[in-house]
Amino acid sequence: MQKKRVLILCTANSARSQMAHGLLNDLASDQFDVFSAGTKPSQVNPFAIEAMQQVGIDISHHTSDGIDLYINQSFDYVITVCDKAAETCPIFPGPAHRLHWGFPDPAAVTGSHDDILASFAHVRDGLKQKLVDWLATNP
Image (cartoon, rainbow, N blue to C red; front, side, top):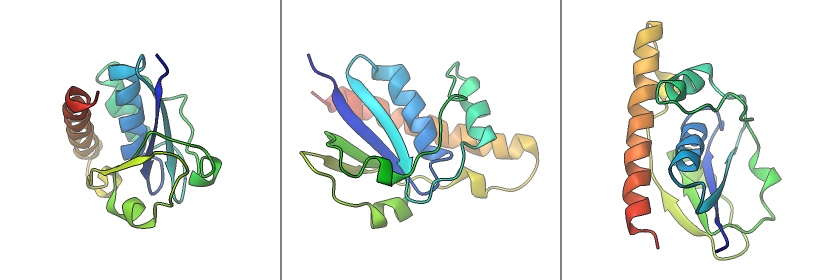
């Protein structure tokens, strides 16, 4: 069986899309080839790495890629995880079913290390639940 291709997008490709990328790889790497990108890429947020380490997933090797890297590639699913990326997401060639799951930007939270990490963990857990639900209904 050929794996389906999934591209997960957010604005900076630093937190939400990176965590969703790591989660989907962990949950279903036998079913999907997973990629993530940003409309304005930056770098993988250290809090995203730490939040994922809390659940035993290492995304420290991920890179923050721009959407231009994938624009001419075909995907089965394109999932946006922030509203800005959903608004500016280009059309991809091929079947590309588009899904939008808007999550708040955990990097926008200020406060102590523990406060910020808690916001990343909250978004991580929400992404995981969305992915688990989606996988339960995805043939």
